[in-house]
Length: 139
Image (tube, rainbow, N blue to C red):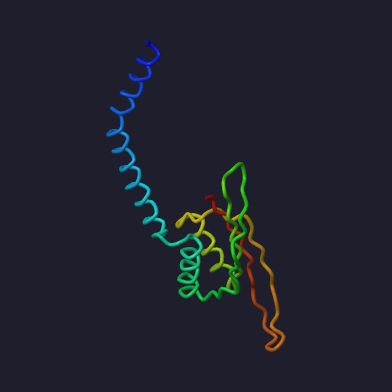
């Protein structure tokens, strides 16, 4: 009898907290929606938002997106990781500005590797800079 009484009392306490918990969950939802809006993740997948941001910046700063591969998906301690790989052609400073924007202003994830290669167009004899970028995103 006492055991059943204790169980009913704990259930009663849980039911009394439900409105408070519902209110907290609604506040969290509003907060997370504001974060998504602030960091330009407006309902689209991160991949689409990332590509849109890269293309917009590239148009303004004379960069060319040479490749954008499907993300590599893995897990680390039960947390899904996506690694996006893309390559850019353009000036060094413009590429560095884009990398800074992606990592600091948009919060898509962290840049884990940038590899620069100086290449030559054999038809024209001119050199150009290509950067291969790896961006890791959690979730």
